[in-house]
Image (cartoon, rainbow, N blue to C red; front, side, top):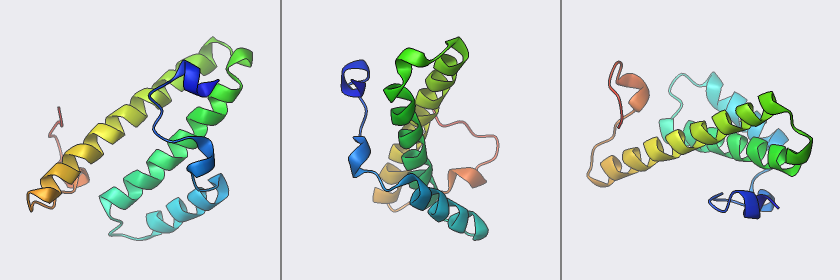
Length: 108
């Protein structure tokens, strides 16, 4: 059903790491002061994917607020994916940029 509603979802649920493991990995990375942007973003992406897919499974029982939350999660995922793509392009050009350190700049 999720594939019919959102054909653009990048990863089906079975290919993702388990939610408890992903949360553990995210907490461990947060403890590091120098947590790499791409690693943190990949973990955030997995968490968001899991949340979106779990929510979509129960979409018929959602109220308006939950649908709005689902929409925000999807928008967050798209923005994060776009930002990660841009960072990868910069890395291919030999520029290693951490967007978290670029205060006030917008990535359009």
